[in-house]
Image 1 (cartoon, rainbow, N blue to C red):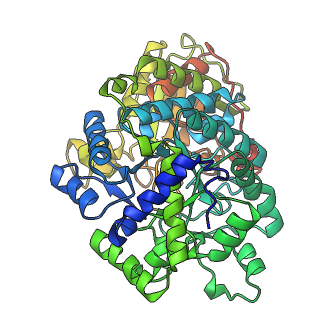
Image 2: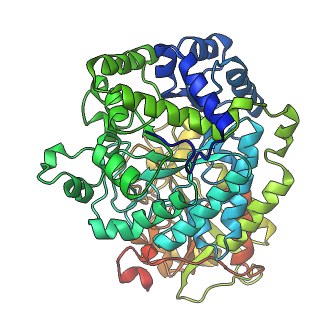
Length: 574
């Protein structure tokens, strides 16, 4: 059973009394509700009332909504819940992970590229302050995965890098900045993403490291955070066969389950070996890494029985609550395990002072997206943007000498053509023109389709001008990649807008070309012919401005790259 006096709870007698008195005051249905974190997308009073009065949710995360709508939603939850709720946000890169008006400061990859801990400290501080302004008390971060596989795009930009010591150091800085501001962290994604290329949204993840390799990487990171008082851990739908086989000799391959359903990983490894006493929350319960394991009727009570304390997201609230109730009645979830989970949930709420809740005043909303936070974002951009290579010696570029610039902007297919063109393209053009370039930016297939759908649009992006005319009208090419992907494919690679598109880099042999990634760090695998390559980490205005400043030599490149950028190839280094 949980020790509420021990780390990370460190509760005093008054707080412990509140935990036990609260637990005793709850009905069975109210207790079951505490296990669930709702994904809130509707904010009408009827929906919110049902969540707190019928389903008795223990926590909330949300999608969408304006700054004021999110504030009012969270205020409603806290003022109308019998037990104050845990309010979580994904502030992995700053306050933009809490609300759309929030400030993107730096991704994990940008923080890892920066030579200074100040970048992650600023990112964490801004994220915490902006999240707290809308009532958040819990963040699903840091991403303390160790990326050892260059093909992994799930945490490529979200993790701090491939060095366990660096990951532990930056994760610890992140955690302490949040703790200072009264926000608890849920480090993720135990037992660790980054060693394979598949996405647990689509398939069970598999951390295939040996026991010894795991201890030296993920084990080192988690132990560092646990020893410093990590309050909670998010468990991924990721198996760790080496440890499952260590703790269960003779276990068959077909019996290996994701960590969310594996007592040997949650109890033997995480609780006993690593000494974690805090709260365990699942990753999203609709992800295929979990759903493929068994029926929802079995895995909803199964994750609690295995050692998870909270479940991230309902499918159907009444049905999911019924599944837990059946699990309690059948003995799948023991009374001891149920009470242990509830004590940890209430214990975390006590850590955060929810026993004496005071919801933040509305005046705090002015901190969200404020000028001071955007200044920190600009500083982070300056510290992190990385020149991976420049073997042709084209940098810095003087716009007076190479004034005629051709911009090829390679983007992911938009979710909907109604969303319009990628705003980063227009913002980059403004920055380049302000720096003194004359910019020609051909439309891509998606832009033509937005103007008017036609089967002939693909042919428009296949046309080429004569090479001599091109060279006469072009001094420099910027080849900008802004690929994005989430829960749709297991590996995001560079994808042109059409087959035989004029975006294909035919121009590298004609004029000097600079390739830039605004997101993933592993695109050299698809464009090894590029002799100059920059990882810029984000497409926000601060990062685009800093990028152009560095291209023209007004600012030096300060970021560093690890060996994963070469993608295990010799030709990417040329």
